[in-house]
Length: 390
Image 1 (cartoon, rainbow, N blue to C red):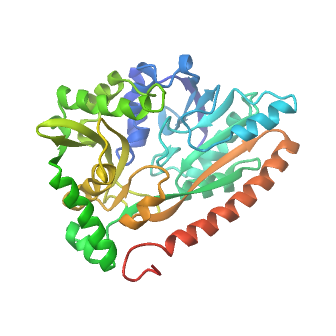
Image 2 (cartoon, rainbow, N blue to C red):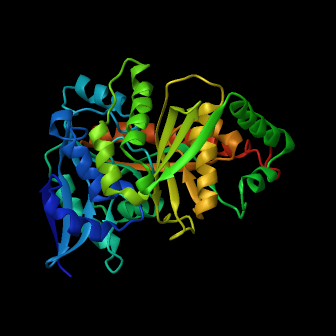
């Protein structure tokens, strides 16, 4: 098998069937519809510092692998922070930007970054990609939030040193709970009462929650969501990364993947969260059973526990109702621990061309991983379930 790597640049509409035939429906953010919408709606394209530089791998005329890639002119929207690396390299007289980046823009959700068809060896694909990735003339290449099995394959098959960074995120996993009360029943009495109290307080204030899926998410519901989403940024004096046009394209192109939580008071929508469904979880023993990804949220009102209900409890109920085995609610947030979200390690890889700079960063990464592992163990001891240390 002679593999050929082709740089396709941006994602033209004509490439959608080839791209999606490789990607499948396991992870919505790698779908052509998602990435192409980011480009077309001025969210992640050359004008915003994300120059598309995507790669496809062919065996003859057959597409067998795809890798999203960007020439990146800043570090915004990545969630693996390398500002200090950029500062150090530029103080030394180098140009850190543009850098090469394989990631899903604005999406710190672990999943496949390199998609490969089932009958082709991923390590063989990585070996074919390695010289193309290294020979860009750029100082660095970064692979963010890849699944552990993929990270291991990159480390084994890439023909140059790759530095690993880790971080702690939090995810819910079904354990034959049955329903939300079954989930709460596994918790200590104190934690169980706290969650029930949080939900009761919102009900007493008149909050009503709906979960809309697929074609139920009409233009009005999407406009209400976007109004709330923008508030998250405007409160901090920032512009939203994503446009209403982007979300409309997702609704129309990934209809069956979307789930919208809408919170209303007296018939008026005041908060919302948009989630995505995927069809499996590599390395979790959950292939084919499905994952829910919580991605975007916002609120026009302030109310205690509103974020927890909209972004966490409604998502858990949706998973239990739909038979989804895992819920990734988004990055950061130690408060997720006491609500039944267990710590998980996210992994990213980094190729730095300059040996001296690479050695300095490797020392930093080694120390960082030790701190992350210690924090991970600390978090595990604080889970609210009856058989946990807490």
